[in-house]
Length: 285
Image 1 (cartoon, rainbow, N blue to C red):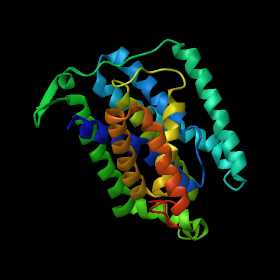
Image 2 (image 1 turned 90 degrees about the vertical axis):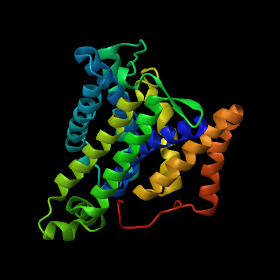
Image 3 (image 1 turned 180 degrees about the vertical axis):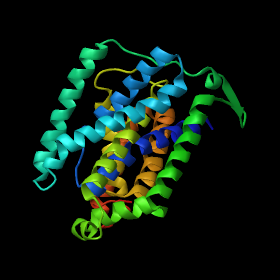
Image 4 (image 1 turned 135 degrees about the horizontal axis):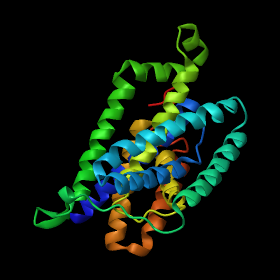
């Protein structure tokens, strides 16, 4: 049971991160290398808010909003200038953003590890099916599931989701119908940054917060996005569950095989479904 709980919590953390990555690609056509750096900023911002206010919940609430605002500024000041250019310019730009964000983080918080304590409400283990399960892991699962459902409803069942899909598939027609495509793109990038920072804030009590922590997680995010299909939210959910449960089983039963299993899933997908298991054109979700 503990393996399943760990796997599910890891799956939903991966989804929070990869959903923003695939949403940005699906709408903007940008492979955002700086996504991991925004995740790191979310963790640091949460730490700072917790240090200032003493409340984990304020950190979880406010940190993603702050980073979403930063994401909107990044999109308006830099990314919007390279949408029509080759992908290599976008990759170089987002890689440059990683360097800028890392240096700014180093100046503000230094090189020491930071840690956000688990909130008292979720610090005790919970007895479940004969096992003692960390309450915070259960919270991550419930919270991640709620965010997943909310994101799905937003993109597939709301007017805003319809506008996003229209602006993604045919921006010229959307402009003709009165949609401010530039504003929609800014909003989508801000939402992607919000999800990345939310992942960082909710991960903060589980791992040490350190400079460069985004590099390790961004690899798993790209694996999820590739397996699920670029630009596909449903695919990201499935791929997150598949990868999270695989890694949890690997950590429990065959630690030395974890990375091999991860990349075996990736290679198998690229061999038999190069566009991803759920890939289809013309939609961001």
